Length: 501
Image (cartoon, rainbow, N blue to C red; front, side, top):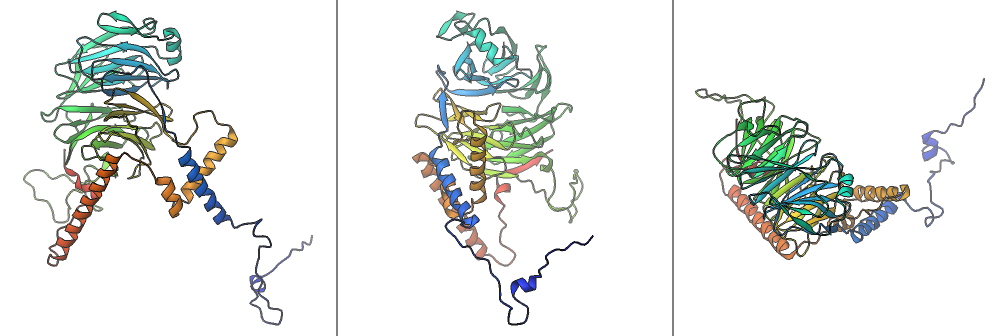
């Protein structure tokens, strides 16, 4: 069978052949107004998408009412349903909220009444655990299904009464009950429950591991004598713990060992520790300097260069080819101007939220050094706790003005159920903005955020201080002899003092 095909060489098309007919052929657009070039058209669409996204950004949704009467220091979400959230305040009040109805299901005030520092749900979310300055771990039993719990509790009109030192909303006594408590040896400052076993850990002068069926801790982990103010279980590697102490240290524990694993000493105190739920070896801390630091726990004891880490014992001399330890943060997240008090990862592990003394809540990409969103209101005070919802669509914040606020994780995304064409349009708009984010106009509109005046003034002051330090270092280098100029540490190493094993 014979097949005939058209064949044209590149030389004949480009007009490079010899002869009188060697005319260079060029393509032309006969109707530019009907067939505009693709890239300029997409750039205009990206600019319009950035403008529409900023115009439609309405992040604040509502405040949970009736709120607390003192600052909210603890927030926790149920691990089996997205509708249940618990909050704890400084006046010793513990509340259980049903997010779809925006109402409180139960209110408890454990006796003796004391400052409740932290709150957490148990591994099966059948109990809410709270710790206070009264050396008490209070456990309140709740139903696992939040919608059923709300239906059984009925409409909440107000406080139904006080029984045994516990305030209960009207109709909620049938849904919540079975309280019990554990007595510790020192005032407790933090609590976190294991993700798979009926075990929880508390922080005081040491990290104590408790079994829910026992009245005494089953394990006690210490390193030094300073008080601890936060503790967090690793959601993937279930035997790992992290805590932060008042001596500016962040300590890693393995409950299978008798002693802690490693201690990281920072230049300023770390207030909170949060593990990445999808990457077991990454964790983020919030510090008093207003920065969040993300670390890879596998690199805390390594050495710089290609050589493997080699321990050096007492009485031995370090070889010349072995370099000093180069422990550094994986990412430094710097936008806050006040101490970072709380960090919470989204369930996907790609984003996290932080609350600060500067009265703002910021949302970050896990690998980015600058925040992508900043949330604030005129009345909101210092933010002591933040929390991502179970579906990752909302962010809750508890502040010193006694309110629990609910924000959208995506400020411009509608909260209604989206039809497929609407979802496709949103995805296309976000993809265009990301693709053309390097264009000056698109970048300026997409990254513009309004912040309170005190925050803006503090940002300008910090920028001026950083510029002065950089100018001073350049002058020192310029006036130093050859090879005698001091080497300045990078920003990822500057805030780390040392590591201990």
